[in-house]
Length: 139
Picture 1: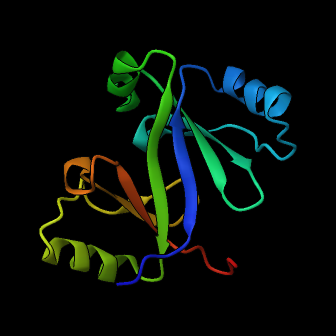
Picture 2: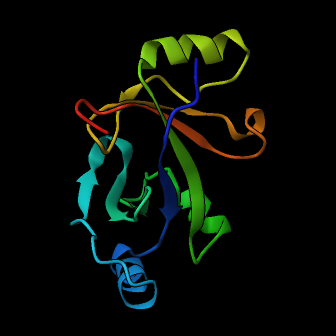
């Protein structure tokens, strides 16, 4: 397995609208996508494009959202995860499992429409890490 491109940095927020304004009005972002719901993951997301990656804004969608726990500890929000691309999600899963890295659930379809899985932060130097299959036609 070879570490791929940094696809995005996930930022949990209690309000995507407030965070969009921050990125637009304070940081000068000019390309901010429309927020959309990912009910299967219990979140609403929005992508902010930067010249070399994206910021994924993540807001809880309903009371069962996994983001609630993070926001309970960090009420203003904050960096939630980093996401790296791999060419083959199944091969990456086997590679990490073969090295004893714990996966948080099975692969599922992520916000970019490609398979993803998360690696336990205790096995990744304290960083929640998302692994995603590179979208077809990307780069």
